Image (tube, rainbow, N blue to C red; front, side, top):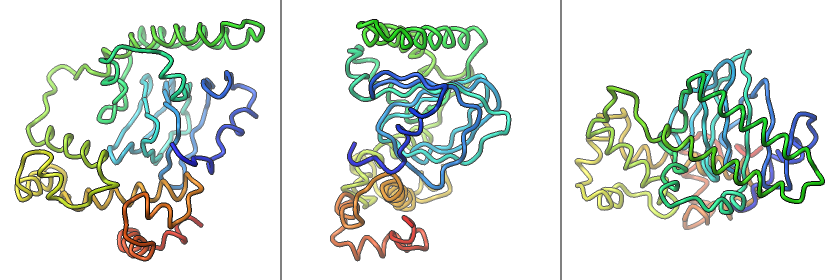
Length: 285
């Protein structure tokens, strides 16, 4: 992840009394309030949020989420987060893990699917599951505090491997009686393709070809399922990516336009203003 510096969240966390962290790879802290951020943003770490009280709402990569206690949410590095609401009684525990830390876990290939929680970022928990997660949090915090232990990182890695093994099953399991329709499956697959290729392609024909469908059938199905056309979804995601880059990075507007494969800064500016009503510069300010 490049240039994700403007949120300055690391220095903010390291200045808080209730934050335990190890190097720049692992943070864990308890928070009683999440202030909605002014606009979409990205982070360069995996974020696990355990909701203990209250509720929070928002979107991850344009997919709405609602987390009500007790529950856990996972957001991956590079995903676009939009916080929209947090109840006054909200309380949660947050665990932040760097990509280097995650790579060091050496989890089996099947866990790559679990970590791709792009379509199901929130899972409700039973009291027993919540207790197990709180036990993990207490153990990790205890390990971090023993500063003269040279094996702290390895201990935390092994505890986290067990944590992921316990979680993986629940992130893949659909609630009893819930079955996706063909349109919902297509919608999910379409958005997955948009998330992967929106920087290179903005034409409906490209995504229809990726899904082995005609552009007309794809657009009609997406429209009937979501109320928006395939083209509108593509434009919305490109605009969302641009907003996140403007707010979460120190990239210039020219660099962002290049990153999103626009032929010029002027073309990018006109596209952005058409979709958002303001120029990239005005949005950044």
